[in-house]
Image 1 (cartoon, helix red, strand yellow):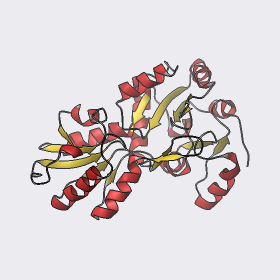
Image 2 (cartoon, rainbow, N blue to C red):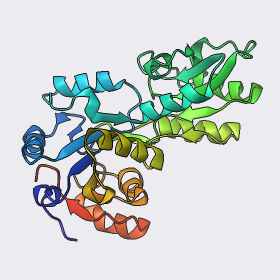
Image 3 (tube, one colour):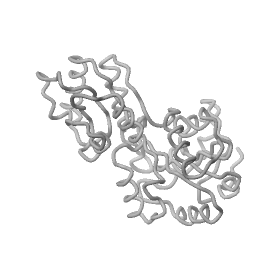
Length: 281
């Protein structure tokens, strides 16, 4: 397994797409050296954007969180989230009624910002659901995992409606050795129980890469072969970038450890163009 330095690789590209969790930060905070790495990219005239499946907060809130963690260089215009894609879909498709949501009030920002009335799944009256036009899964917090998931299943049994999953991640690291169930995992459960087919946004779906590519080109024209996707997960970041037709770099600072990387690549058939220990090494 050929492990290269990120600095050596990044200089071959004009634009870098970074995943967030496991690449720039973890449960303890931002990785040491990330700010220096970003400043070095800027000095070399290389653009960068954060492509994240985090739909729990608006781009403004995500940028504010990066600032609080010592990365003022990651401004709102640098963030492309799966919630933005879900918001775009809902703005085109839902023109009446309410949208029920699983998540926190803060995560409902994506829906409310386009003028759609929302209702938390916990406040849905199953005896009066005619005015609910869609269900959107935004976050793994903000609802009761027993009563509200049961309510969501019964809502889908009572009324046909599109179900939007704004975060395709099934788990996320909670500590070095443990993971927590993400809203993508909740979606798989509800999809199985309701026997419906949900609409998913986020990596590895091509739509978020198309959105990011258009956004990057609006700032500065760039060809696909001049873009590198950097991520820590084969089944979202790497396969998504591969399918979109851009080069990919797997970092071993997040979900995949160095001792497992070669076996996982061989068993999945998902092959990154490069492998790095981290974006700071």
